[in-house]
Length: 124
Image (cartoon, rainbow, N blue to C red; front, side, top):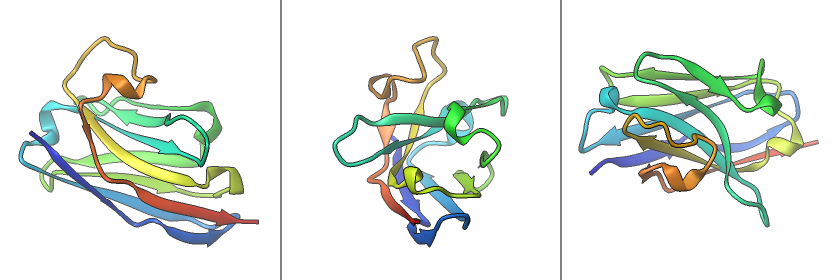
């Protein structure tokens, strides 16, 4: 089992930056693909970014060039640096983990472990 705890959310203005962190316990994340999802009110949970064991990264189009996902296996942590934030980035952000698999990364049902979420609110 893996326990994931996110932190770093908050209320910011458009154009500001935030850095989300995810602390893992119970299992080393070095053997897992890690990712970030977000869920806005009334919408389905959507894929934001992921980083593989080999540190290969992938982002949804709407955050490319603004968000950066990274992992620190020594500290068992995952981060998401969010720059140039927009009101449409407002959502609860979730940290996720799963063993390497060919299953679609976009479907949240294909991820095994989840944090409780952290709220990010971007005002215009």
